[in-house]
Image (cartoon, rainbow, N blue to C red; front, top):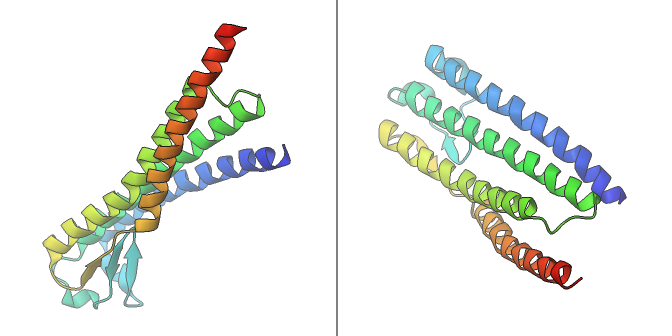
Length: 173
């Protein structure tokens, strides 16, 4: 029970941090269009699967790819906030002794889809940014997070089966 209480607090904190991160990413997107020079002062830049290691003055129109990447970061942080919110709901249902509920299965499915979407979004947006800017960009795909999302989707099926078993037992009683 202590672990669930800690998880409940952690998910609230994670959701708040993700919301702040989404807002900051949107602010950085605006700054990328206003003054991109200050974003690359140390020579490297990495956000959500995109690396820029080339000096900014050698990249043609750096504002657009950086703006796209920050938009991608804002969406990824928004999805992280949603995942944290749904995890909190699952923990609350589990603490109440009701882990096999239709809402729990639905929330787990949403977490899985979000977890798959974040690395795919980062890779797609990085490729778009590379096509726009061509030089000095490197795209990556976070396979670990992608597989985590697939694992959550598989576990969702186990919970759905548990929900059906719970219904059958409740009908027998």
